[in-house]
Length: 211
Length: 76
Image (cartoon, each protein chain N blue to C red):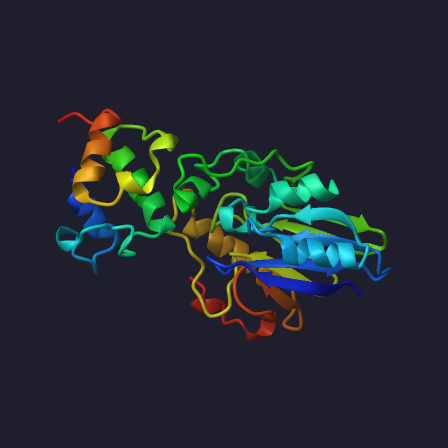
């Protein structure tokens, strides 16, 4: 089974970046490299001699992509994102880094090498299925990603918090549909790995309190 | 049409923006508030704020935001 090798909580915005290990002990994927300081992640990868096959993005916001450029430069993985997310990576206004950094520049990243646009897509990662499910609502590019029994929900589902749909380009209606889809597809034993907060079982989440 | 003070109050009604020396330093506007504020100002006044102007000194007071809106094409 794939497993979480590291959950790094970023300093200012407390977003989660995950390193997931393949059962072969050699391969890894990174989910949401959201810090400008990725040393915890790179140290683990180098110490364990891991091959970073993919960086997977749950959505386009700055607190989930701030370390993307540095990881890409160092490990040359393929980046996987929804098409809507990918289209916003290069625009500091649309990935909100312009507002977070307030330096007049923000962060611009190249588009993803693999873009997801068919709502639900499953990819084989050397014998492990990775399923990408577009879940717009919090942002147009939001996507939930399952790897084995792990479900990376980004900001679509955050334990104990309401899904944020007050941002420009957020859509409450889309978020309702996305949550319906996620809760219909995954059972309560699924381990929810959110974009912020602790890893919990999906069954511990009260769907009715998310919106 | 809302003015800038009204827009600020609608975003963070719990704060008194008239009695602040620096909105940013005093934590009255976080990054998500700024996103909402810029979008609201652009919509209200039909202007586009240049990304290079998204810096703290342009958002630390009502006067600074008013000046930014004017520089960005807001009609008096």
